[in-house]
Length: 505
Ligand code: NAD
Image 1 (cartoon, protein in one colour):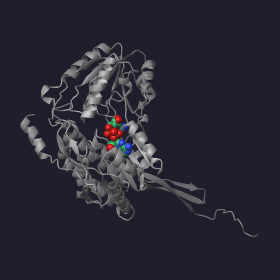
Image 2 (cartoon, rainbow, N blue to C red):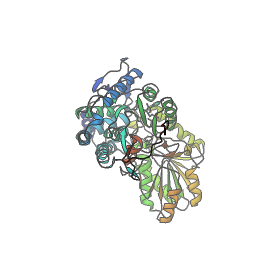
Image 3 (cartoon, helix red, strand yellow):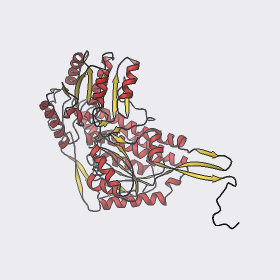
Image 4 (cartoon, rainbow, N blue to C red):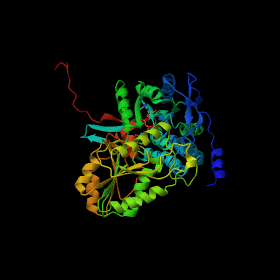
């Protein structure tokens, strides 16, 4: 794409300063504080972001509580509430190009990828409108001729949503859509490194005309704004996506107020290529799975296990791909790999590549063009001769870094795949049907793909086991298991026996 076109793209995005959105109004933080939002491609300041703290969280929770208890939102006829949800989806569709541009400016994710995410975000709303309307019903239990018991699913009240920077808009809508559709009210605390599209969502929800206080956004840092939301006694639940250590802190901090929590955490997912696999397709999937999203993908196949008989051939092809991946300006539609989110994360990933060398890996990398030196670019990286017990195979690097490990037997590879604290995703490549299912069932992860990359139908449960999470999002799981609570009503339909304590005979 020409530089003229790139400029055109940038010109269509308005990177204005970002405020909080509380009770239907865009406002500054009470303290007046704001922080810099830095562009990962240039390391220059994009804009300033109002820095919410506990007083702002209190204000937002108060507005959300009032909207839940006194407002019409949860009591709206279901058709009415779903009209709002569909309206949000339509507005996202209308503004999806600007959303994609803002997201790429903010995160460094290539525009070709943020475009897809923006479109998917609209689908999240439509999907949850459909699911709530058709599936959110209870059961009834006739008990002999004496009772009918029935269940209803009630919204929780004010829910706190805390999100990461790696796919901000998509992940925010993934939580906001089911929370709203089920009648809850929301305080969203977006990641401080990617605040732009959360405000775009607030603008859209504002335009859609939702009652004031139903949806609120408080920007700020995790240790202040995030922690205040977690500790707030009027917040009934926290849905969190982010690092495992943060998840653990949040669970501890939510204990005093006995909150329900949902945890979508880190990963170190294995991709296993057996000798009978379709190697071309496995190669496409392995390369895309770690190098798309700049490697900042929770379900990335950061450990690739290759059967010893196909290892050399596969590595040769991997090296060719790595040399040819298009590294560039995130705003250029032909870019495949952009800069990492921030300097600190860039240094962390770089440091892991040094650790890999010290641990004995051969490091093979693509080349970052010199003109890109202003950005946080790490080239696509292969760590060859890796062993599963190395730090680089055990710790989440969260960058474009693939560790390649050789194996010989099915038992050996399953054991190695499972020998890690995480259990988010896994990928199995083989033409042997029995082996495919056997291995997929044996790998300890919440989500397994056989002969496929991470393609996800919105109906399936999303989430991990072990240190990758607690609970599931997506599908009907989000609405039944998290954003609502079952309530049972026992109805006597006859004159059943009631003990008569204290009655004189
Ligand atoms: P992070 O844990 O650093 O931050 C996530 C959010 O938590 C941010 O909004 C942050 O401000 C907030 N936060 C930090 N400390 C807090 C505290 N003490 N109390 C309350 N909130 C706090 O994660 P990140 O670096 O933004 O995201 C990358 C991580 O997210 C990776 O580990 C990745 O694997 C994980 N992730 C998981 C999934 C999944 O579905 N399992 C999806 C995407 C990302």
